[in-house]
Image (cartoon, rainbow, N blue to C red; front, side, top):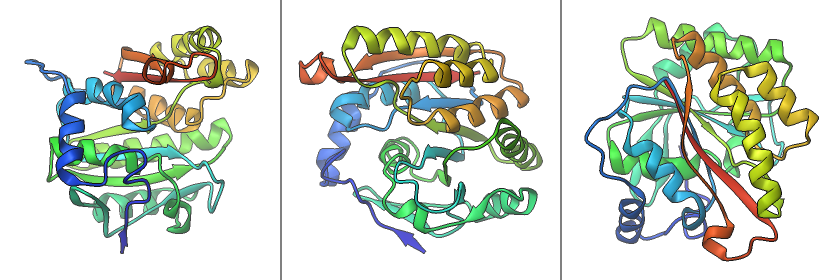
Length: 267
């Protein structure tokens, strides 16, 4: 089954040549590429957050497979919804879903379910794909959108991902797709995002979740981020590093109502 692009021409250019130029502008020349277990990437329009995503992806060793965890903005479908096969389309062509890894996740988890509907109008995973295609045309993906879950459920999902990664012979990186604070004055957004990034970078998942919830921080993908942190830590990650942070105000010039964007490596 194929999934067509839904935000081409909105979040990123529709024409392949223009899209490639846009991505190239977001990348940074780096000589040393790092091995990472997970990354946090934003999913806004490239004009706002593309440089953050580019900065992160420029400095990591690109794996054979990306397991991409994104929030379910519309709340459609299952709580842990997997797209198990086929390919996703962007202006740069198709990117294949790793069916073998997807099947392994389904076999090991009682929580994850096949759910195409949950993905059809969700942009948080799609926005990551052109960058991956540009950097590694042969890379594959495993798309998973998530709603809310108990800490026990998040831990169970993360343990499933760990077992699947460890039992395979391919290099895998976990991607948590999330923007940070939404629609606050820049000073407020930066303060809130600094607060939530502190436990995230220390890989303290419970404190990270508590910080988001207790302070009512509008980080849309904090559940995917929590799963990524748990799994990455179990895979041997010791720390998170903030690669870049910015807000939409830097692009729009409007600092009264901004969205924050953070790029993080977990290594």
